[in-house]
Length: 419
Length: 214
Image (cartoon, rainbow over all chains, first blue to last red; front, side, top):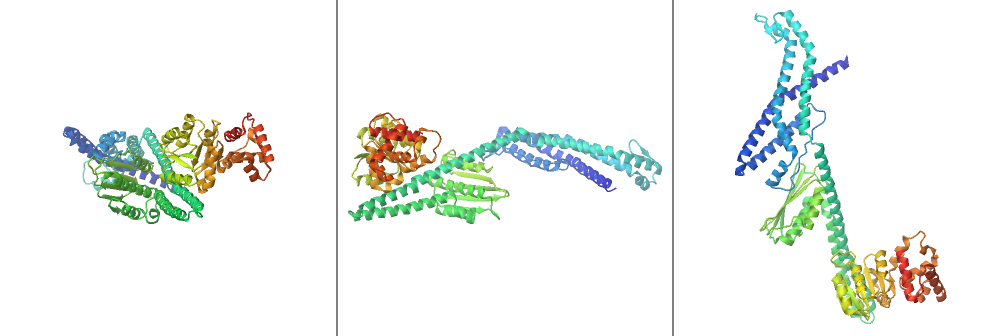
């Protein structure tokens, strides 16, 4: 008894979700079709005036949002969720964005779904409304005849005419008998529509493979970056602290030799050794800070960056809007070194008078922007920036540099920071 | 003793110059890279060249390569290589022409100026001066059925001291054995390593080379 009740509940729930899916498909179809057709025809029509690009871009953005709504709506009839997977533009700017949208097969499939949803929606809506309405009409025919008994006209139910209380009860019987058929019809329409949505809106295997390739490349980049970083540290140690210690040992050895016959010279050597030791300590401290700034771990990104900017040779103002809570350590440290490298470059190359640093966390994305008022012309493939890019891409982030000759130089990094 | 120095860091280049000059050597040239070293050796024909392993532009083994090139152009030029780390391969490469006059020391050794200058003099005289660190490193990763494995532990100790460039007297002192016992060990080593008969100094170099190549 319990099981038949729960089975009935299950099927009624199923029918409810299928019906909602099919019925909402029509207004969604009208919306997506309208946006797609209007956007594309306007955009293509205006392409000759360059105004077409922003229109097409806006259309793509709108269609992408609608496709995401569609993915969520498909949850009504599909067991597992549809994930969205779009290409990330490799750099910022309207042209790069347009290019990434045009070359992304998913966008074209989104467009196909936007167009198809109208006929599919009409069909689904018709099937759902007809099936549900007919069955409900038959089952509740007695109530109908009872409430309308004073009229003499027979009630026309298409294949069946109800003209008195007995035929109305017969209609109920037919309705109950026809219910499974209606259920099957609605289920079939919903499943078909859902399968089509999955085919067009879910990422393809090749695209997932491409994603794997990107991940492999960025991981290799991260390994390279780590190796380059280790080499730099080893070089710094070799040329810095290690060399100074050798010099100290040499001075002390000589001083010991001279102690008896030339104490003045020995004194001078000892003083030199002491200066050298102080310099070695400073170098070691700087090196340790370059590997992992203590303040970053202890006080977080905003304070560490402010402290770095305060030490930078070119004055830099820092604004940070990072919300509550800390971000993952790898993200904070990548963001810190983006700013550190950018400000070091500003001091070295840009001939700038000031720089601004802004760090904003929006939802699950951290945006870091460093702008200077220098003469521009930065090389985006220079050693430091290349290492930074590898580091950021390993975290699935992006790094963009705009540095026209004459300036200003703008460096922008985006890092996913869901904790 | 006339010396050429090749060291890219000015701090150490100046320090080495000072150290050598205050111990009775004449620094005829102090250069900062491998090309400079080769031309300085060709020009000055020094008694010994003191060379840092890592030189620009590669900062890897530029110093070793430049030293080998210089010895190819001016055969027999004694070379004392200094390094932050010891690499047995480099020592073997330097000795591979069998001409001797090769030293390979950790930079740490400059802390004892007298000892360091002494090593430079041994190299200048055609001997070897391998850092005790090189020797003990070699001994650590050794085993199997080489000719060296036929040596008794005492003969190995003697060979290590030969590699460091010690004289027979110094070896006897270090191991607390008589000079005749040292000579006996050495001739056993030469025999076991199958070294051709030639003058003693040359055979000592070959023994060290066999030791490094093993």
